[in-house]
Amino acid sequence: MNKKNKTFSFMLFVLSLLTSSCLSSRNISQNKTIDRDTICIDPLTSKSNPHFNHSTNQIQLSKLNPKLELEAKYSKLLKVKTDQLPHYKLLAFAESWMGTPYRYGGTDKHGIDCSHFVAQLYRDVYEISLNGSSSTMYDHCDIHNGQSHKTGDLLFFKINRGRISHVGVYLANNYFIHASTKAGVTISNLNEAYYKRYYHSAGTPKDKK
Image (cartoon, rainbow, N blue to C red; front, top):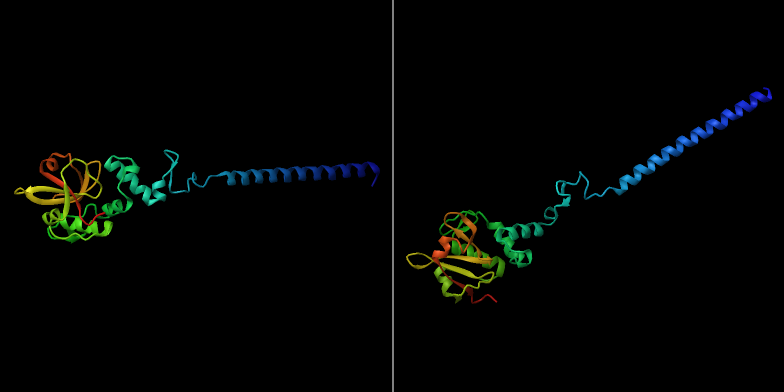
């Protein structure tokens, strides 16, 4: 092979090396870009995350924390700020019984009446035993007739024949929970015309600290 051919072959060899090097460099650069992009994806904002709300670009914390979810629900329902809510144990109890049908003499989630519901609430939430009818509970309370109510107060109503015949438990902001004959376990407001008409007084069970 003459000198001219050798030179031409050598130049082809060098050119092939440079081309290969450039392709390799570009592939590495692309791979690095992909890796960087993958690392930078925020798992909380990923479309694969079922708890991300894409319409508001906010994490639905309520789905990650049942306590926050419950507090948000009752903050809206009772129309108070979260720091004004009854304690979580009472809210959890209320939530677990909401919608239970009314049944006179009933004591469980198949059906319950107002006094048994209040007794169950006080057992589970305050670890206090209350027994008997609404009028019996009235006799075992320190009664106060003012407009200032505290969470956990018993609210008494004279609906039947001018005697204490219904009882509920005060929550906040004039809202109380009770077992209603029509709606079952529900939350009502003392300012509703019906309850405003029959409301008698509030009291704190003598065993409640």
